[in-house]
Amino acid sequence: MASGLPLGLAGGSKIARTLMEQLGQQRAHYGRSVLYDPEFKAGLKQAGVTAKETPLAYASAIGTRLLGDITTDETRKFYWRLNHPLAIADETLQRVVDPGNQLGPYGRGLVGLTAVQPAIALAGSYNPLNLGELGRPTGYKQNVPDPEDPTKTTQPGTELFQRFFQGRTGRPLAFEKAQQEIPSLTKERYANYMNFLYNNPDPVGQATAGLVKFTGENLQGDPEARILGYPVSIPSVTTLAGGVIGARLGSASAPGVVKSTQLALDIPGAKEVSMTRLAPSLPAEPTPIAKKGSALRRGLAGGAAGSAAGAILGVLANQALAASQRNTQLPMS
Image 1: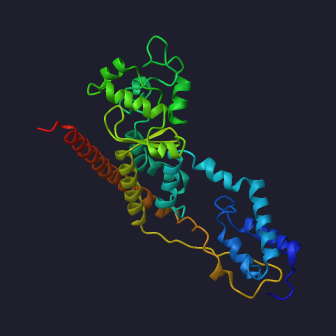
Image 2: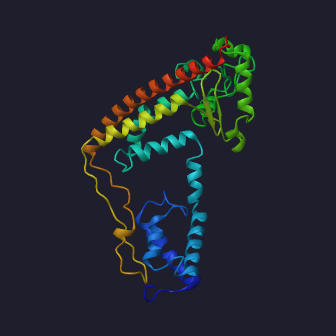
Image 3: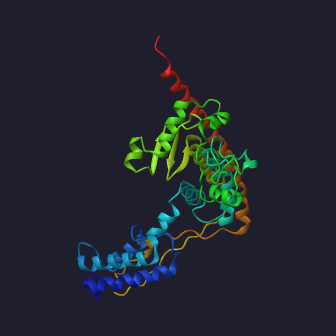
């Protein structure tokens, strides 16, 4: 235990407040929470506050960190940011393709057009070939349907907002109308899919109260998952994976210089230990603008190539599964 280190509840709380204040000044606030804060834990260890040696001080320090988390919504921000598959895709793009913020937010947005948007289109949340009906998915009503014709909408502004901002697909059309758009649709498949949408027949759906559920056949006859109500298909997953990997390989192949910054904490009563060994590096600073352009171009090209490869792989997987299901359904001779 370090000399001069205040003991007990008050001492642990004081050290925690000092750490939180200094860390807040030396790094971007977002990205840490009471559930994951390695710099904070390293600072406690440096100050001699551990669960084994100083349990009261440690409990007080963690309690103070928890209070700080609650007052700043640090943990809840992760839920707010990752409570939708689209948000997860965006976070994946940032962390995998551009972990050092080399491209910047607008550069990542451009790369996302080639690495993420194709996956979203293949998920079935909108139909990019049906722009005349604002991207209405095949076999579905508009979110705000016209009472006379559910494939039309009476509120185009609301329709666009719900489809492209909230990710809503609308409800399936009545069987007869849906079959006009999907000739292969059968009454059995339609009934099974409606049961899947509005109930939780599969074990995963029952276990998660419908937050995550799976079906072997959607309206088109392809496997589909619903995550928080949003459709996810095999081609969408493989396209996203291919696009992100391709964009990462492309942007990483560009020449550039990356600098890193280490935390340096000044904690009263702390042990004489360098924080360079205890705390992980902060995110790297952006590379010079001249290098950013090269990374952006290569990231765009890699994302497009990876998305195309992933889409082909996903479509082939769907076809293989469909063929397998047909074979199992053939009558025995």
